[in-house]
Image (cartoon, rainbow, N blue to C red; front, side, top):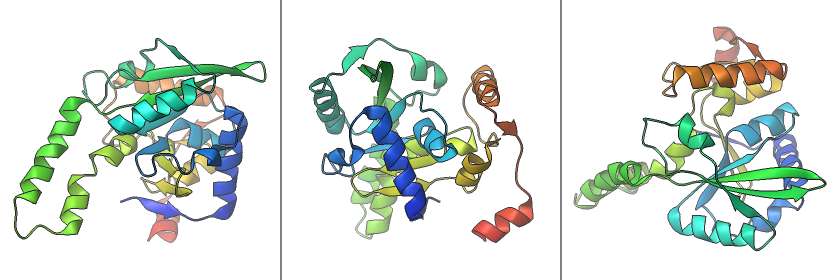
Length: 229
């Protein structure tokens, strides 16, 4: 269950860090294809943890992907060939090969990855949508649940500190697994029980975080209950 985070300090920190990385105010994108794309994962983790952002991952619906691609390429970004995220999700059939865009800002190369749900992934949810729409007793809540394939892709993470999704248009941060922000603030690594990524890839990501000062661990049950009930 996603939890909306309305902590002004956290939201301001995310906006500031993303803007610094991109070289322009992220809020310039606030009216661009609202609710059709989200920033998720590592860039949000690093923003909250106060660490260097390595790249920005954006999950987007097909039409929004084309618009985002045109927007960024018209502002100096160029497309590169990359299989980074394809390898991360190898065998799960969640996404097409990511579109990787890069640009040099302040003498440093920055990266944006546009993530698109695969046909197989979309079709799985489309069948649910069709089934609900054919039901006379269909409720709005059921339709919302059926259409959630888009956000579910961003929320499908293996390490808890990455369970974050940010809507630029609404300036809303979603913590999609309880404890994610707590992990970011304390630089703790907790692999989720339902992790689907290949074991060697998870180990590689854990080692990268350790090299940046993170530690494996979890919070006590009492701490989690006090924070999340």
